[in-house]
Every structure is written in C-alpha cells, then in structure tokens.
Image (cartoon, rainbow, N blue to C red; front, side, top):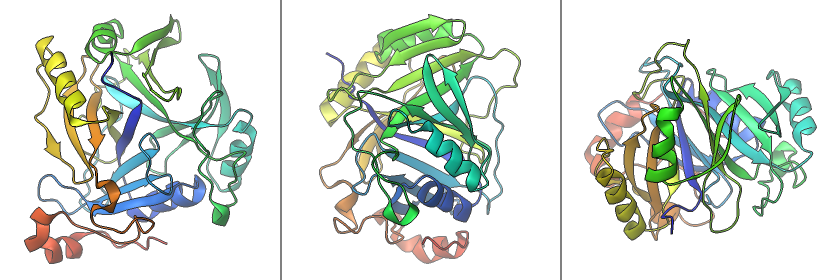
Length: 319
C-alpha cells in the first residue's frame, strides 16, 4: 500500500510579490490561502500560498518572491521545469482566450494525448493548464474574476521534470516513492501519483541533454520542489525510512512548516520532492476558518524579529 495520496502542493521561487499575487489570484482565479514569510534562514522574503478557498491539499501553489533580495537562479536540466494544473475537459479554449486577453501569451498544445494551455509566469516559469477528465474535484470558482465551474482550475495536475537521463529517475519514481509508470515513449515518461480519491495527478519526465544544469537553491525564476501528500505522520515516516533504506540518503529530517510537516528528498534526476501532511489545525492555526490568507502572519520562532522582517519585505498590496 502506497503511503502517498495525491499531491500536497507545488513550490516555486518567483520575482515580484505584486505581480505574483495578481497572476495567481486575478489571472488564474485562485484564492489567497496564507501570507507568511520564508521560515528558513534570515532573508526577509514572503511565502505566499494560493489554492481553493479552504486551502484543500492538492490545490496549493506556493511561492517565494525574490525581487527585493535580488536572488535569481537558472532554469535548465536536472530540475523541475513546469507547473501543471488541471482544468475541466473542454476548458482550454476559454483559458487561451482569457490569458491572451490579459496580455499573457498562451497557446494550446498537446502532450501525452492531453490538451493543454501553455504560458509563462511573469518571472518566466512555464505553466500548463491540462484538460483532465474523470477528476472529481470541484473547480475553483472566482466570481470577482469571472471564472465559473465550467472553466475553473481543479487543482494540481502535476509537475514536469527535465533531466539529462530519464532512465536514472525510473527506480526512484517506481520503487522509492512509488508511482505507477503510465507511458514511456519519445515524448518522455509519465508516472501516475496514487490518490485514494481517484484524482488524476502525474509526474512527467523528459530528456534534456543540451540545457545547462538548473539551480537547486531557493532562487527567483525556478521551481523549488513538488510536495506529495502522505496524509499523516506515520505514513510520512514509513515512506522516509523506505526511501532512505534504498540508499537515497539525500533526505532531510522532518521540518515544522506550521500548517504541515515536511521531509525533502533529492531525486537522481535533480528534482526535489517533499513528503508532506497537513497538521490537525492546518491553515486555521493562526487565522480563523473562512479568513485564511487575509493577513500577514509569522511563525512563533520569529516573534522577536517580526518588526525587522516587516521592514525588509517588498511592498505589495494583496487585494
């Protein structure tokens, strides 16, 4: 029995906080789920969370906007490359028209038999909206932005990894995690993420032997990690022990992320994966249910630095 049930979230490092917020909440119609700061290190950087109104796992995209500290990375091979979200069947044309109408260059493409809308985040990170049938998740609607049930994003579809040799990823994906291989052809390899609710979510892996090595640190313009949902701590610890026992020892101890607990592991193809589960309090730990994502909140261990962090953050209006 797999210890994984779907994705938990996807995390990327972007550029400007305001353009990031506007892109996800206004262009894509997601909702603000949490506004906090980078928990690791000392740099004052926002950590912004977007997804369904209640912050359901498998809908969450999180970002670190790095414009103010000016830390930028390099997109390349041996790195997660594309953020993919699911949309209802037949919704691609709506999104092509909507995004182009809002000044975002978008086009319809097909890969692995699925119609997709391909476009870029303002900082350049590739995004795709993938038409996905048999997905029981309710579309994320946003009346203020003109997005209804027929077209709304349902949540995470997956992430695409570019690597020098995708065969090196196969044991990790099918034995360590483990995911189910669905396709392996000239386009790449597709792995299905187990999900107890039957939601279709995937990891796609493609060969790229010509691009430079991509950055692995937290740095603007790059995807940092893909988080898979273990549901609870016992499953997380069992999966962590299984992965480490196979010899994939580049795996972290458990880290407290306030709203969830995390372990991180570097795959042979370079992409960083996270094993995560939501704590019982979840997003309501520091904001009332129904009011999440409305205020800037800090973890208890930054209590003495709150004024310093506020002063160092980029100015933005999260409305």
